[in-house]
Image (tube, rainbow, N blue to C red; front, side, top):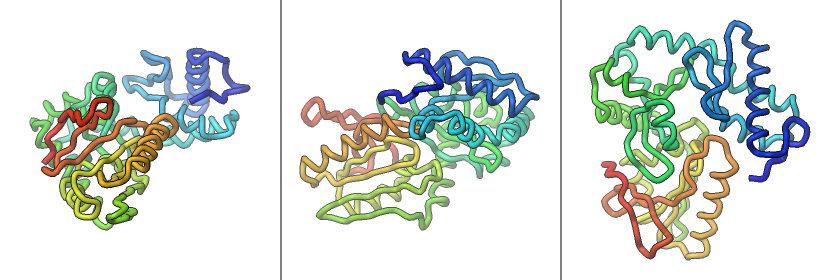
Length: 288
């Protein structure tokens, strides 16, 4: 996406990111003088104490505004208003909160591949750009489950994942979605509760989609808050238009995930679809 920064930042992308990060730190230091904010390991990160805060989504949101100082300060206020609660939440886990106390808060989440190494998150494979992780979703904070959590809780990654799927299934009962059955064959989930893309991981929901738009069917997860499924029986032009929109949304929207198209096959399994070679499909996962 071409930058529209005019007054706040310099022209090159690296200069923009560096200036953006500096401005965010400046605003946060005024709002939270009790904390010390420093530059992160790359231009899209800052650090406070031992916590790394990503700026990619904040910057993507800013690009969608008129890009004034007031816009930026408002977005920073919105995104980091719960920072004190995050510290409180993190302190609880330093005390090794038990699995029994946290398992009802666990949710599956699709995440960019770099998160796994960046945060040492537990993960399962999904595609070239994304992995499957799990998060703790508390009203006070939201964080990815890391490998040391599994050691502290004495549970396996598979056990955490199955608990997360159960919790998201319960959360998804009766959610609103757009369903256009065959012959069109289209489903859109856009509740904006942070788990729309992750709902493709729910086997029962995939079965429901298949009953309405046929199987196999394709889907896209351009960002965390959007899931679109479409019939393999659609005409090529419509399919290509949907794929282009998926790629555009990936580039333009916050919490971006993948510009790729995926497929749910006749066995209700999720795979990434490669369109560069005829009928070449690479099976990344076996989600039952």
